[in-house]
Amino acid sequence: MCSSWPTRFCTRRSSIWLRRIAVLAALAEARLAAQTEIKVYSEFRRIAPDGSVVAPDRTGRPREILSPGVARQAHTSFRIVVTAPPGKRYSLYIGENPEKFFRYSLYKEIWTKAGQEWLPDRIEKVDTPYQGEIPDPHSAAPHQTVQTFWLDVYTPGQAPIQRVRLEAQLNVGDDWIIYPMEVRVLAARLPDIGPYGSSIPPLAAPAAEPALEQLAAYLCGTRIRPGANPPNSRQLVARNAQQDMALARGLEAKKGREAMTAALTAVVGATDLKSWCAERPKQAQSGYDPEQYLRVREWLLKAAEE
Image (cartoon, rainbow, N blue to C red; front, side, top):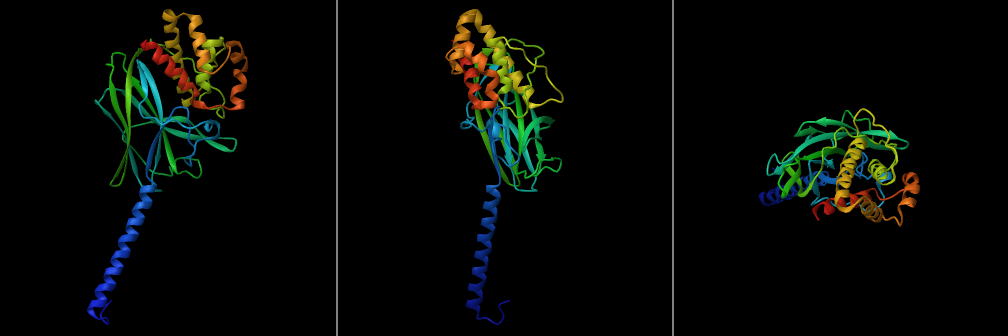
């Protein structure tokens, strides 16, 4: 290529080309890195195929999930969002320290069209590590740039009270990205609730609706609607809330029913229980921060330690 050029010019020209190639390679690597990401959300923030929070769950600012508190003999759930370069294989691992402290299941979420929006709802159990690519060739959802997962974590009843490291680990090629959580195993131990009665509101309602319906059943005596098949995330949100209400009923022996209802009414920001119960059916239509229910769970876990 440089035969007609003096040696010093040929060497300089080759050096320039090599630098350009190195710069282009670095830019390409940076673009791939920008397309590789892992995030963890609460169970009350559903994610669309393009990585945005779906419209019914968009009110308020999503919580950063870093050090969640969990009860023993209870399930806790998180949503994991994986972003990977288009068509490139990725692997999703779940790590914990100490190992085998929790029992967990990983589910791939499947989007369903509701009106003009695609919402994750149906779940499909997968093995870990899970390997896939984006877009998922089996998904009907358009414009897919992420894959979402439901991580269901069970804390055994006899688990010691301590902190446990729980990680979502993403591998793409030579790159590893880790989302670490320091899970706080608390003193609260839930009773065995047995078969749970699912409350299944419309898919387009905020993700917290199944939980708030369980709360309304406890506070207001409203009826729980029957469940539905195949399994979906709305059922598991309801199950988690039913665990919370079992904890609330257990606390009545110490605090009394009247004190419990007064405290939970205040936690949800209501001035009186009767008004809150009357307005509950309209709440989904008016919109609300779906993570407001987490304040109820946190209050119950704290009350169990007093």
